[in-house]
Length: 170
Length: 378
Image (cartoon, rainbow over all chains, first blue to last red; front, side, top):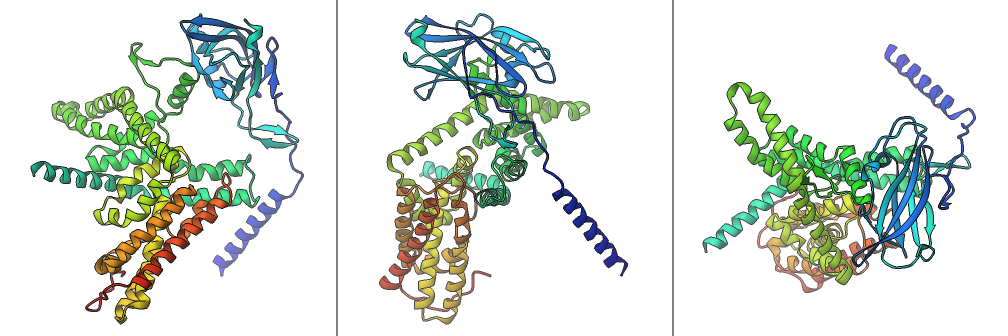
């Protein structure tokens, strides 16, 4: 009898907890989603913790290869000192095909792994990509957020795209 | 003659090793597969959303089986090769350590050449969900460990054996064996991808037709690594599971035709129960109890399985989880990423395998059992 009573009490308590959990107003989440595109020369958000600015872009020739070298700045808006390595990925594509990354012609590759304090900006970080043609290059910069919030609903994070017209560089 | 004998023993030993490695982890692969199917059903019915904590938890529950596959493989490989299972699992853990995985991914993204001690090059490999690298690494560990054990002074054994074994296996695994395993795995993937692209029907047709022979030879476990790798890395399999679906349903078709046509009362019961178990993917009783002893139904099963396998191949059906190939496995052809035609063609594959083999067995007939058969299904 006591066991049955105990089971009943537990079931009741569980049901109440469920009802409490289901009731109440849905929590409002702060809406965050970066602009899907950005321009060279201005800081832009890629997620909740990172700001990026593409400073300059140049084409360097090496043998038969043409290498696009981008110079950028990164501001760490996170909660701890961190490296680029832990925070975002920059990839490039031409005509939908991914370009091969290279660190040839990058002046100081250690900048890619230097920890940056919270609120500080690291300038003149460089990254190269081997070009396949003279077509437009799209840089895709993906941060480390698990989701972006749009209209109080979570959506899959997306990379911020930066268009680079090679004809203007030559 | 000697060479042939050695080859045979090597091949049967290889099958035995692969069976020993994969048999213990099959239950979790089936469980993980079903959980992934449940995730997709909940997603399609709108019970959960793609970007939600529920999705992340449910996805992790099913996918962790495949993501951490090297750890389970390390453990079972160690038991097969006679190495220390916890040390093997630790090596797998090292290769899959989040920062190591992240470092590999990052280095690939920026074009950074990774090194160990500043000079030894470390080739890019992706270890989570991989199959072959860890099996080769544990095999190497099984050779290193006894040597360290043998040459360590008795007093220092408890320190030296784990230290030296883990260091040597970890480092050699990272710089040599892991990349070799990755290359072999990649070559296998390229070959299968090439076959799927150029003549998608070949592999499922062969699997549909000849799976019964592979089971008889005990060689069906040799295909599991390819399937496990496909499921873990691509998220679906087009090699073994669709072909096995065709083969098992063909076996069921043959058994039910035998059950109806045979004059022996006990054989009717045995064939019916073997047919039912084959419908649910358990092929042994159908094979050993009915089609192999009667011979002709085995040929019809090969034809029916081959025809259905051909359909599975040309329609390129994809199985999204490892469920014993049978009627229940049809759920694995449902995916949020896939059109409903994938399921329709999977059902068609099952139906054609069953109907063709049933019709062949029914029309062309077979030489009936001379005596009553014993129930092999119990």
